[in-house]
Image (cartoon, rainbow, N blue to C red; front, top):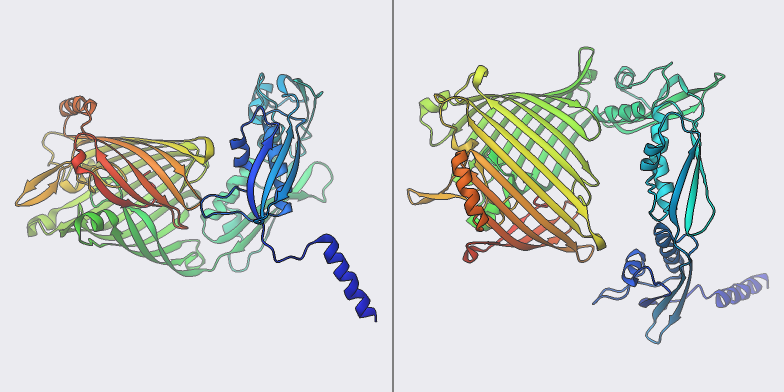
Length: 613
């Protein structure tokens, strides 16, 4: 009897709430009413429920509807409509589609008329407003104020003000006079440093990477730097550094360093898309498929020294599509990396390498390189690094005589500076990067050749409405012999253009070519200018369209560069086109169609992975 009563009660509950059903409802039309200041298109962009598109439909549920009402209200508040009211309703149609209506009462738009900062001593008012994103004469965006609070908090934590707090007050209306109440708090100092999570790694390898010690004033910048340096050891899969209340009276905190060790050794198989380095040191990278096998020992004989053995096979896509052949590139290296030299923190790597690659993708004339390289790294911040290196390379080609093969070698010193502020390293939508490369071959180091090379690379990414991105890339390169008596720079070191990462209207490395012995050979230059611009347009989560324009110049002298600039103005060296992108977990695949400005009959269909830049 009790079981029957419970079953009957459950049936009544289900029928009342209507929660159990096999009917699937889909989203139909979405309508906004009362939105005079914000377009319906923009509001549909922030909603998760979407109207049907071709064969794509979105399943309807009330929870998502409530969430979309919140998203619409939050979007309005970011525009300064602080008292906006959003009411949602829906109606089920005969075909089980659901029409949705959002009724909006916008209310007045609040403009920031003034800001008064009280309690700040260490950071000036102008910087506080900049960190919080507050601008006089602009709509008051409380959402952004909440998000940017962490930026201001971080600045105070750098100064030891771990107990910093911020409150704000204002009277609602169209003109807002905002008051910020800051409590900086007292200086906080570090009592004990506690390391937990170690199993096999010596505590020394943790403590020496920390930029703080007991007795120091707390500094959040030093904490973040210490976390990054611990990750750079490759010994740990997790690093978390956090303050906690100390048993010591006064303004003291304990710092707990929690780590989780990685396996000491790993055998890794790493397939993927890649920008494969050109067989010419001055050529642009080549889009391709890469397969790598890597053996890693992260703590060789418990010394903190990392050993890496890596072998890769690269298949350049440009060559597969345009040449009908598969010039396989083999690379292998053995490396030893350490973050310390004696008691000095100086990340450096010694690498022994062997490369075998077709010269400029000519499968009949491979180049064999082998040698040793030392590189050192200086990191100025999360965004800025300086890398320097010394390299000795022996080069062997089938075109060389036995005597040339015995003599051909390069000794070089290089320096690279990179500053990068990007929101995403694979698919950036906002930010910029700057890279300066310099190299001197020979000179005091000796070797077969004596020349210098300089390269400048600047990239800018700007977000556009509806997820679109405007991207620019400019690249300038210059190389020359160190003196008139130096040997000419070999073909495998010159600048080259053409291919899916530079001038898309030409095959890889073949912007300029000559006919030689019945074979088309690429022609390089001592001066390089490359410019690319594209608009990246997402269509769905999987597909996108890019519209692009590329321009480039190769010259052997400044006088020839001036002449080619005149030809550049008339369209020589330019191409335009479009590409279809397909998103994959390894990065986008690009199918593009590129048309040279002055040679439309030479239009080119090609593949590229991932983005051109």
